[in-house]
Amino acid sequence: PDAPIAIIAIDDASFNYTGFSWPWPREYLAQIVKVLDESGASVIELDFTLFEESADPAGDAALAEAIAGANASVAVMQYFEVEEDTHTTYTLMEPIEPVREALSSVGIAGVIYDDDAIVRRLLAYEYSLWNKAYYYNWAIVAASLYQGVDLPPEPGENQFQFGNSIIPLVNRRLLVNF
Image (tube, rainbow, N blue to C red; front, side):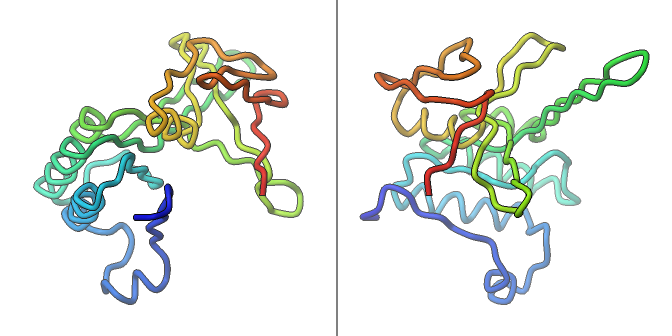
C-alpha cells in the first residue's frame, strides 16, 4: 500500500457483503488478519473486544494462529476502577488467552466524548493501583510498534517521551489533531 495507514472498517456495507451479523466468526477474522499480513501490514490493530471465547474453539485457535504469524499486532483491553463506600473494585479485561499470547501488545480503548458527542481527546494511559502498571492507549501502542519506539515505563501527567519527541498531554489526555 502507498499510504502508511489503511483502515479496514467493519460497517454496514461489510455486513451486507459477508452476510454475517456481529460478532463475525473468528475464522473469518483470521482470514482478514492473514490477508493484511500477506499484504505487508507493519502493524495490525484489532479495534474490537475479544474478551470471551466464541462458540467455535477452532475459530478462536485460527485467529490466535493468524495473529501469531503477523508482523505485529495490538488489540484493545479495558481497565476499570470503581470506588464504592467501603472498597474499590478493579477490573482488567484482556483478550482471551490464546489470542492474548499471540498479540504483540494490548492497549486501553480510552476515547473521551465531548458534550457534542465528538471525540477530541484520547486517554493516553491509565495507571492501575491494583497491579501498579501503566496501560497506554491502544493507538499509542500501535504507533510505538510501527515506529519501533519503546514507551516510557512511567509517563508524566502532562507529557511523555515518544522516541525523540515529547508528546504533550492535558491531564493524561492526548488532544486529537483533526
